[in-house]
Picture 1 (cartoon, rainbow over the protein chains, first blue to last red):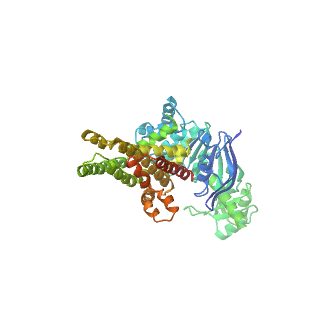
Picture 2: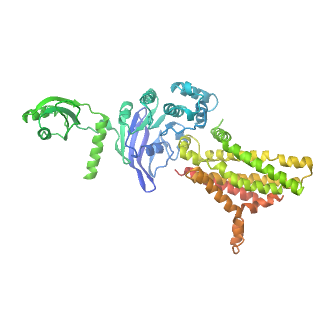
Length: 314
Length: 233
């Protein structure tokens, strides 16, 4: 698929403080991208540059062939953006707000009411359509913020921390909305919540300290396989025998979970299971359980940040 | 409705649904009604010259209240980000805010037309100074709103914006007193920055292009600075 977003060597300084340095990536049409990173890693800055709201200090961002800085008005016609914390005009009623947003997006005449009606139905805003925005719950506020972003049928939808501060039901509702939009447009969802990104994204990019750690965390990271072992015997002997197995990167005692014998977590190569069992048996320890753990985004994130910290230390 | 018309509608609605507009109108009309009645009974002259000077001072004090929230509030609530990630320019946003605020100034002046109407009913006023006085007040209002939006666009919050505007207005009001103390040619330069020096001819029935140019330039400079302030992010 052709790239809808091309970012080349993006740098952004706020005064002397670097927020982004040398970020480059491409995003294909129709992808659902999860942009992951801790608070302050530069996610919002990157998204604001993609929307044309912020100018980069160096480098460039192209969205559908349009330079985000030089052709920002044309670019803004084809994007939908949900800023962090859903800043809305609290004094307007929901319907009034959506009509206003449709008009500033360039819609006129019957297209305005058609777009607001479609957004109202899609985000299930019937109950609150005549309510003042300032009186809405956080969940409905977020839905209204997403609704306004969809009014111009955007080619690119950008959501900055869309589930921030929502309760579990509201998170599920917002997640369902984003899932329903997948395939209709390219979506970038920024979050610092790993489980959210894992559930939504087809590709995960990780930003750390203003630099792109990986453009495809799930495929590029290739972290070690993790195993959970329950071993009876002295902890020192168990850790020493597990650490002696070739390919083992780390072996640690898992936090107590009330079960006996105690559990250990080992990060090792993908076929180290048999060797770990043999090592435990060879040391005269009683192996009660050996389970390969599923590789999740959390372990990838931790592994990548550990590697980065290691590289910096070196 | 175009995007600009939608922005203008939003600003008008925000202004006229807030208590600020009505408090400003009530204070303005109350003060002016008292002044008009008192002046008329004391002088028995069908003239509005004194009234125009009092409106001049009231505008200096009230315009910061009208303009303080315009950009500072949107910046604080992050609604600027929502607005400016849509296909509207900084110029459209600022001009919409300017025109909406100016419409409140026009409403104040329109309601004060009761005074010349009263004079016309009970006397024979000289209409020349009345026309020029209202033109001067309109131009003064435009200049003050322009400068007020500029301070709102650089201030971190509404209170700072209001105090900054008030400081600028009061300085420009009395700067001619300071200017007269300076040697040639600095005195003329500084005296010509004065709001009152350029307003006096309007209030007394004299029209000079240079005075109108001063107020229009101040308004345009304010708008330019406000647009630059909005682009600073």
